[in-house]
Length: 453
Image (cartoon, rainbow, N blue to C red):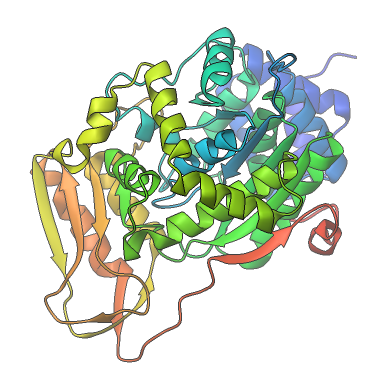
């Protein structure tokens, strides 16, 4: 019997479990563009509202994974590992974790995405490096991996094409936050990359897609379970996103901060980026078989950071993908936005809270992100934070500096920062950077049931 999108949408809308055939039909229709966008959008909303069973999720992820080409790393001579973040503000850990894992003797074929909602995009940040190519063929990516051990690229036209279509629709249909759709999107791309091991950084807090920690735990468990069932060692680490990560949020400014860390420079407002990057890299090195434990892996990663080998690999990757290392070396001298504006503290007290989502939207409005898929972003747009939660603040002290190419773009972000950054009378203790680690051993505690709505 022939399948029709209308019937599949109605089945999920009414809370029924879809068959494997129905799910594959939707995925095939997305990949081949044989199902209209309005029907795919309706199906996404039905999933958002009704959820999926674990069987449905496995079928969806597998169908998306094999909707196009998959990577084969036979003969590479290295085990393949990767990390992925569910999205945050100022999250630049990929630029440290990937070269750290490569420096330890592993390979990281990292397939990344662009800005989505209030969060930045790894590809947009890399493309702020003049000449850097994020769109490589699989053969070109293989060459970079053989040469450097790390390659950070975007999806090719033929790699997980179903996800490319559904991903773009999620951002336009208010269905981004579904744990099932997040899981299927991330895991289909990561599994298509042919990984031996995967570490997932699941953000929780005011700047995360899933602010509620129970929801973040559930998503982390879903992804750990999905990866393990597919034969990829998978660990999910819940990390804090109750304030911007590091000192900068934007495009070039995040590359600039990452390069400083790779050079061994230490700044008190960048210590959180350094720490989380070492934790993630430590797990990558452990799951990749280069360390007996995650703690030992972290020690290996820190050694590779200190001896400069991770910096060398990142620079080699940039050159191999067409980027200009002179811009990297120029650092702040290359960062020349047309307009800057400082946001000052309205009163004295303590920095007690940040609505990190609003900070993310401020960065997006400055020109670092996009409102619609395909829109250009501005390389030098962004934000520098001058304080972390818990710090004592004096009236008139700079809290943030905004960067933009158009002076009019500074107006709305300033209002967003005024709403987002709170000064209180009593000091607060910032949340821990790492909240929880979810693996094959403890994932069932957080799954609770195969269906959540």
